[in-house]
Image (cartoon, rainbow, N blue to C red; front, top):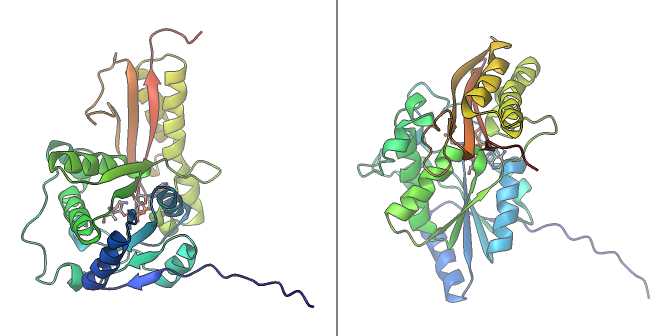
Length: 299
Ligand SMILES: Nc1ncnc2c1ncn2[C@@H]1O[C@H](COP(=O)(O)OP(=O)(O)OP(=O)(O)O)[C@@H](O)[C@H]1O
Ligand SMILES: CC(C)(CO)[C@@H](O)C(=O)[O-]
Ligand code: BAL
């Protein structure tokens, strides 16, 4: 008897281009009592996205990844047209981890053109990313609501890299009583600290080095807070990294209360979150890190 080694190729996810086909898959899964997870993305997948998918696998029986570059969340001078669209590579990356990919065309999601009915992100939606990208969070929450209604997942996963987005999705789910658990997954980074982001592929080699200013500034603030320095000192430590790199154009740098996303007072104690956005060449990047402020040295 001969022994043949069988090589198993990971199963490619089912590709769904229409809302009807997605609803059909979801209906069958529900009928079989399966728990459904949704991972919303804009594609150009990297290991950060795959960490969300891996976590989804732990939480659900059916993992659906959506890939849709949502025009509603891009401003007129932003990168909607040039945003990377890499569906074949994305499907290969998801083989063996996602069960299905919902990748609709724009007119499948918005058959009548821009949606007349939209979700408004409220006060926090006007700050930071919302101040720099007016309308961005209304567009993001509108498409996320549509995806939630199409897939009706038990759980949806978002990256902590987009901390304000994750906050606003949780706020929407609470405000509108949506029966969906939201799970935030910590930021996946390169070894040198750069947060993985689809937009990193816009960076030249020298810009990639400059982009490290964002994570370095976060580290400086975290280290200051670990030395029991206050919010103002941690912010100064982070800002100093940008002073040393005039080629990196700071958009905002703020230390907020993670429970409200509003700026922390200079003498606040407890948990904080430092949020930063900056431009390197033509590329706009964001990052954030948790930190804790205490008045007494740890024993
Ligand atoms: N480095 C990362 N670690 C963990 N999650 C991430 C990371 N980068 C993105 N995500 C999450 O993946 C989801 C889809 O994000 P998206 O497709 O916009 O990718 P992105 O890398 O954030 O792209 P962009 O460069 O446009 O910001 C979001 O919930 C986002 O927070
Ligand atoms: C959540 C999302 C897929 C909505 O378009 C997008 O904002 C993103 O990729 O973070
Ligand atoms: N990653 C958040 C989606 C956006 O930048 O439009």
